[in-house]
Image (tube, rainbow, N blue to C red; front, side, top):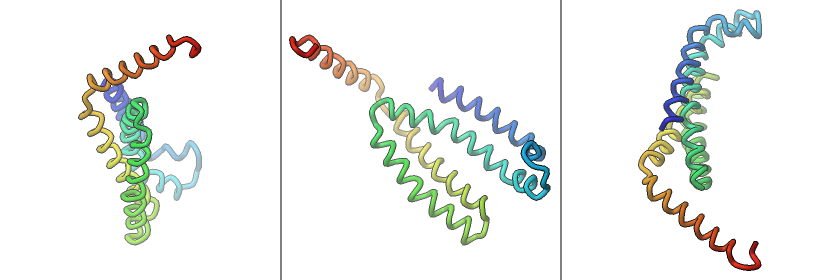
Length: 150
């Protein structure tokens, strides 16, 4: 919970900075007006992505740290293939939003992934998880005490 809150605060600060500098940000890399306008238009998506990417990796890290790598991989693949790519293709190509539409699809996938991982993380009985971990450690320690396994 603490890491999520700190990560969210830092992400919001970065997102606000990006939005505040959206009209001048691209001039650090180019002098082209067309590129500057495109970057300015995409900055709100970047700001929202930064906020999501401040939360989602923390939740993924918690799940992977608990040994749920397969679950995280399945959620990741399902979200991007069931939501991200179809929505991105629909908005990007059918509705002709271009890069904004494709990026919106990827944001939708990340939102769904964040919701799923958040739900799993916050509905987990952590006391039970600690007890199961303790049992695994005790079993491993008992095996080391057996002669010949040192």
